[in-house]
Image (cartoon, rainbow, N blue to C red):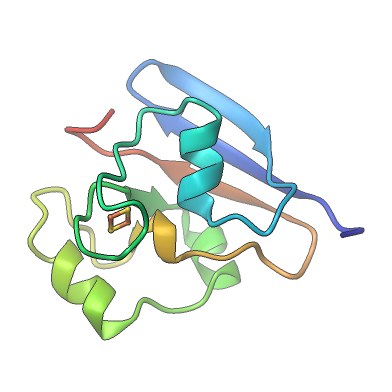
Length: 108
Ligand code: FES
């Protein structure tokens, strides 16, 4: 895994910069580094408590939302059609990059 992927995660208490080292999902990287993300379904795309807002450039690096993902996210008060993603559905990008995101309320 030669290329580096950095995650910059903004939340109510500040901002963390993490290295995304493994093939874990983005949700697992956030959760395992103690970020305030609930992820109560464990990554099955059924709870939406791993909701994040991706910065515009970051969104282009991780591909499109699936229909299932969009259906779940649309139910969230903090849904943003341009930025919202389920972090459990995001895999590590195949290029060196930085993923910038915000963890929206109420999980921040
Ligand atoms: S962890 Fe439940 S939808 Fe992502």
